[in-house]
Length: 160
Ligand code: HEC
Image (cartoon, rainbow, N blue to C red; front, side, top):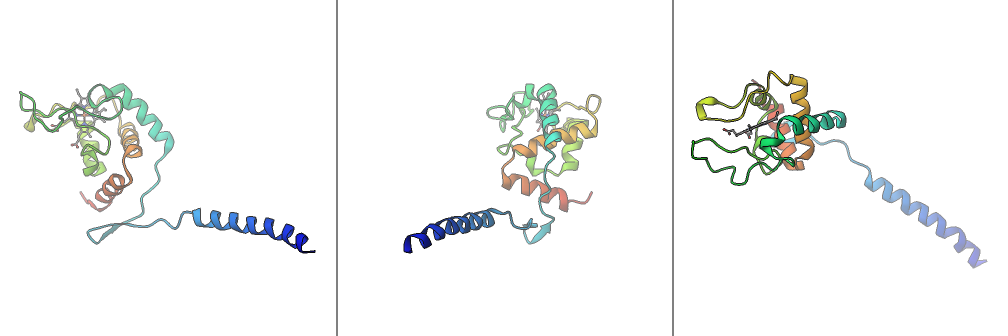
């Protein structure tokens, strides 16, 4: 008699534990991104197709300077003999994620500021805004959660 009850209780217990684990693993409601007491809407999801297209375009146009794996140049913070800065990394170790989408789009489309001796070329003739957006989506897919939240917050709270 006892044995039978046990045979019934064990599967029920296992089922209960599985349901509990499943419930605990469910993502909660998306949280707003709050920095310095200012809230931005929750982080929007990235389109995987755009990220893949961005990775392809990056390999074609950008990797030669910014590195096949977004790693940039060693000592990218040290100015070269001609006073210009070497290509920075595009992953979280660089500073691309400090800037809002609009500014990044401008830098890539129109090039770096020649007044500061920037050697970042303009890509407006080769890439349209959708393609540049795809490259930015690729960068975002490679940033840390913190970097991505910060860049999203800057983008969402910057009014131009
Ligand atoms: C000929 C080399 C070269 C190529 C090719 C190139 N870049 Fe750059 N890029 C640079 C250099 C050099 C800088 C740093 C300029 C400065 O700060 O003065 C830079 C800076 C940038 C920045 C600004 C980073 C920041 O934090 O301010 C972005 C964004 C960027 N590049 C994106 C791209 C993208 C996207 C492509 C491909 C479509 C690309 N670059 C292709 C050389 C290049």
